[in-house]
Length: 152
Image (tube, rainbow, N blue to C red):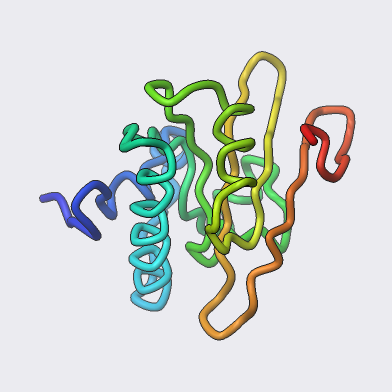
């Protein structure tokens, strides 16, 4: 059964993880996390509009604490609370082009990160918790460290 969160996003695509499946980790979100994932899905609908309707391919959404540890996620990762996803949108352009477009947009994201690990490149997009002002923080993260605003 598929649980729609919005017209273009399902709960399953935010919780799917090959790593969790392989290791037998239950990545089922609590109801409060599902509320956050619904907010994230609504925000992603706005992102799609900025990206001229290009489909977003989510590679990582919610991560339970055990999964976050296994994949080396930060201890305070927004993924733990269902407030972030990693994605690409090949029909729009490269992850760099996506970051450039979103940085110039009106969207009130919390974090926008151009991420690279080896040959894999993606966009990390986080939203602020309910009632918290978004920072509009723009970063680049790669295997060598973090630098703010690298693509400017």
